[in-house]
Image 1 (cartoon, rainbow, N blue to C red):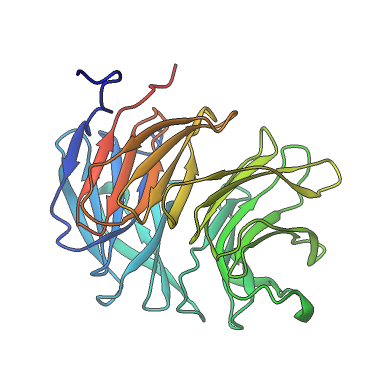
Image 2: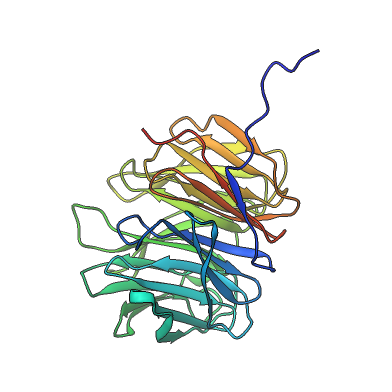
Length: 326
């Protein structure tokens, strides 16, 4: 008997050549790309590969982390500059303008944990950086590029939150006050007011460590995934109070990353069960389960045009074109 529904489509194409598990992915925004769209990937071997999506080949390989795994990548809005975080306890600032691939500056990190940093662009030449702090439960906030310490955020002792696992800096369009969302080892998500150095709100979303979160400032709504089976959707009200809206239980445990598409229509998760799952953001209706990779999917990233990339322990990067942006 013929299947009632056709299987989900395969990837549009696959990038090979990292020769190491892919830990993190980041699309260069279209306005920043030089001749063609670029994708950055960070590998377990410590290399950052720059991929041309036009030729589907590497443009360059950046070697700045002494063979230690790259855990986070982000381009800065003021030009062709890239931040890379590695397990060598360094955060490198790269100059990629005019074909250069040089390290302009480094920030020494105090934690070798799994927590990825976060950036908030303040002005054309100034930006704020959140990194895991010296204490196991601390987050350090720096003003960049001066590396001036703004503050250290540490939960109260009775909170027993554990290590920060993922960070998200942001601010509303109506207020210049920077805010930080942090997912912790105990499964909680906390909203920090950086100016006041205080916790605005804290919710217990998961029974396992929060592995990834993303926030939609337009809808004042976020989503988090953990080492368990549950995706949690939560909202933020006018009093800066977090509330869990709904939860969605997956078939298998382990969500390495969750990301909302720039147009706020869909979201994707990277699963330890080798699967990429796609959901409708407003309703959380499951839209697709993409079964291509042969090992854990470590990361997912969306381009501004809707293209989806996924990186895996199987050393491959799959590129998908699903539910195209209008």
